[in-house]
Length: 265
Image (tube, rainbow, N blue to C red; front, side):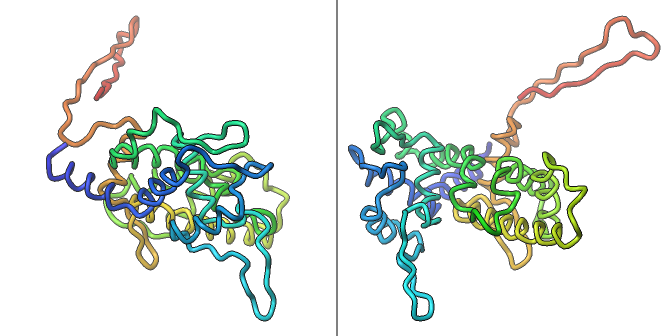
């Protein structure tokens, strides 16, 4: 990797808003924080964190003349994303009802690129933290790893911006693959596709907060660090890396000879 590209990646990792939120959250955890019986951050702590981290969540929202009391911190999707992402990246863990930092991961907090990569690699495990559940739940939520992988592959395979409509299709195909939808009506399929497309956009918006993509009005594109991360996840070489070539020939096949060339980073 060239020095300018390395510098761009380091700057992007250090400037990621979400990386900053995760670092601040782990710092807040400190020596450990008590969780509720269901394993959630307490509402008292959530009130502190929403303001401290700037999650954008509304506690006890007022709609019209009614106040809708927040009953659990898991209802605060912005905060839940940060908490669950830190868990998925193994920066914090739950021990006997307390949230505690993972000691061997402490050094990551001072290495922005490595921390960014740890969060990026864990992205496929955090969909249930920020996508809506219950009524209006999409296929994207339970099949998030497959859907997110399809999105990143579609973005990676193109050199520029990709239309959102072109991204929603591969994501839908990936998340519905385990299901048989032959008996679904056109209306049911249209509704399911609509909420799935909604969650594709939410997924892309979350990747944008990490700094992995840039979002246009109707398109998305991998950033330099987003492309770097996708190559790492795919175990692909970086531009300029030495690549060894090995030619394999199948034995006992002479007419015509059959061979394959492998590129090994």
